[in-house]
Length: 176
Image (tube, rainbow, N blue to C red):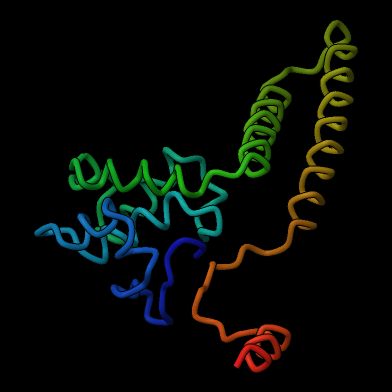
């Protein structure tokens, strides 16, 4: 995950800066009856790197709720702390390229559903052909967007715990 560090057991590191420095996340962890699983629920739904990212958000909520709480409609989802932490997570995750990709994927899905439901006849064959050409153009543009996202590199957590670089060390030694 990008904002939160999740260990190999699937638990959130409670002392991770991404959790304790964001008041909305800390409120979820400190709330009675919520804790780590609720924070994991938020991350699995709203993180761009989530393994559930291929679902639309409404379906993602259901699937993650079912996987974590064994119900499609987790009652905790409407709690104030969860809503605020979810909004904060979305805000911190914002990336225009990812938002454009999401929009493209949504439109491609709509086109696919429209084409799938269309009955092919001589009267609408030309319309169907235009739709398919339009989808092809959208897919090319989407691929250019994907290439741009890949060029920006993988997301990395910002870490301030690294040592000084070689040049910084030399400068520090000279100053002494």
